[in-house]
Length: 367
Image (cartoon, rainbow, N blue to C red; front, top):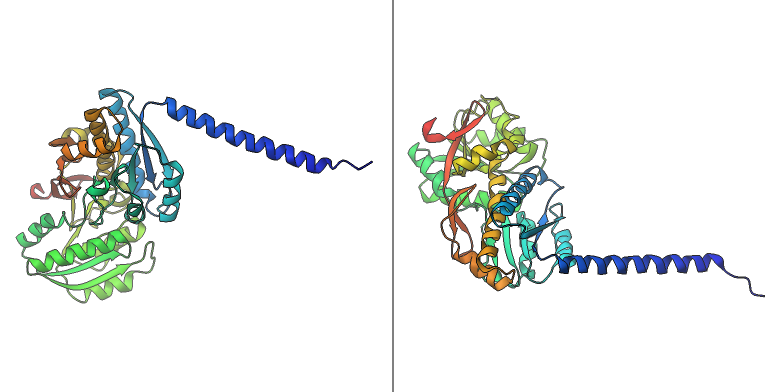
């Protein structure tokens, strides 16, 4: 009599059980999703990775907006967060795995946005948030940016520099899409008003040894230094410039509004720093500034609120209807101020200069 191979039989039984469980789970999930009439907003986010200290504030903004959406419109939105860690390939996998008909997509970070753009053809309304490189918005593909891009903030910066009659500039930026975008935008805008960029220094993310580069840049005698970036290297730049005795103006965009940044610096280290960020809605700022990073909370909030506004206008999640509705949104008053969607898919809203006094952001004109 042939001996029974119990090990093989048990293996097959386990395999069949596991396969059956997976099939059952998927069918149950699909059934639950079909029964859930709320509009799905899939977020290709970055809860981990180098940019997570900034993107965590976008996520706080989504949460705040969801509460207000439920109060204003009811329970119409369902959020699903996928953590790419800022890795474009992981984001592509997450997109293919989770895409559904007539969902809305939120994309965070420039590298992820660039990777996802070729996969989109207008099938989904897509909102880029936390993305500042200039070519993020493509309305023909249903992609809109609810954030400031590196080029649109430059007129406000140049106005400040012209008013102070500053002619020689240095640029410190990171070697990623965001940093290089800011570098190009600042250089082009400054040269256009007759200024000269006398030094450019590019840093790697989390680069520890930066003193020699800072010292070298200061030998060119810039009157103003433009700094873009985030994280510890970004913070170190301000500290080292102060230690080296730089007396000129330091200008920087909205990453400075993160408490992870300015709360690590002393009042003296921030004395010559001017920050360019949205002209926040005063009422909402007073209500929400206790949460931290005003800029990213504001744009996370406004991104989701605009999606809800579009959904409420058409009362369907159909992509073509949502895209049309987004284009029609006028005079939206949100956390990041008053703005509307332009024909090129970007948003317009006021940007102003801030300084920090006594731990608070105040308009530079009133300092």
